[in-house]
Image 1 (cartoon, rainbow, N blue to C red):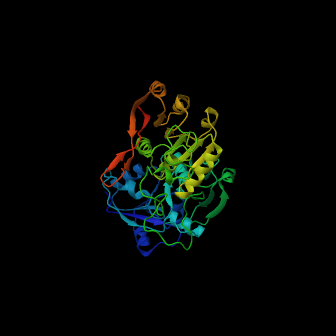
Image 2: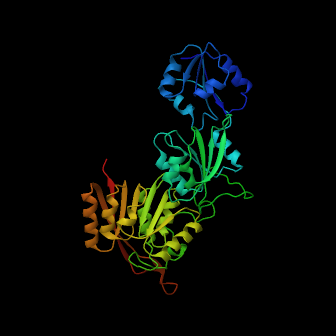
Image 3: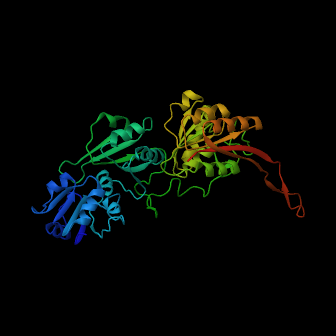
Length: 419
């Protein structure tokens, strides 16, 4: 193993005394081509262009002498330190960070960023990074040559955002461009780039607002109710006591919403459809877990209520008016789908898109059997439950105690793709 391994973060500004000393004494230096060309690398030092981190790490492990790895900004933040620290290589590092590219990008934009989400498109994660941009109103995206600003904007087609594209930060070629998302694909962008994706109806911490205590604070927090499966009256446009089968003021009962969320398992980076979303009670609860949500509803007035409820809880929910294959066929790829209404026909369209998880509500035993057959025929593992719940109410008089109100039954089926 090399006698000493120093990882230097460089943001284009003059190196610190410690970084300059480490570089001057290096017998092996690894970095990007522009870094190796711009920095005072000793003439006798072996140079490695960082392509495969694994190959570079093995070369460093075999080296005898002082090795330096040059990385952008803070190499411990979405940088090379994690890969170099892999136990496979047995490397012990000294890290000398500079300002991270994310911090520099927000500084160029003049924005605070403790409330921002930070994601990377590295490793084929462009779609999941785009879903985070759908779900959150302030996101920094670390891009790659094949998953850059244009590809990100195309993934967000139809979702209005402002892009702040920061190219070659800290170099003489640095450029910062502000565009609306639909104009981004018209440009040719350089790598590396950091993209700030800003906008939407969710909560953005504004200038003058007191700073929070948690970086990247969760969607819908603070200022909203704790928990989920909230009572129907917590949502605009939902009638108290409305059943799952009601057309107007429809909302799934709270216990059914709790089961649906558990089976869908929403996490940041997911995109979840809610088909027959009514006023959006379940769609909003899914979005509060950080997933991107597309709520499909045939009633225009209900679509308006979805927007109201999303704003109430500080989340992003894209409401799509319509019903049927022609609407679902135009939606982006889902990770999971909830079919609140539409029966086996809607489920048949959904399974053709191969989501990882699916939950559907049936209103009769016959409909439940038809839905089960459709899910099973598509190769999913199928399960389900008949839920029955009755509210507790106060009886008449002090001695009467509690009473049990009228019950309601709900049929729920779910499917998961086989391993």
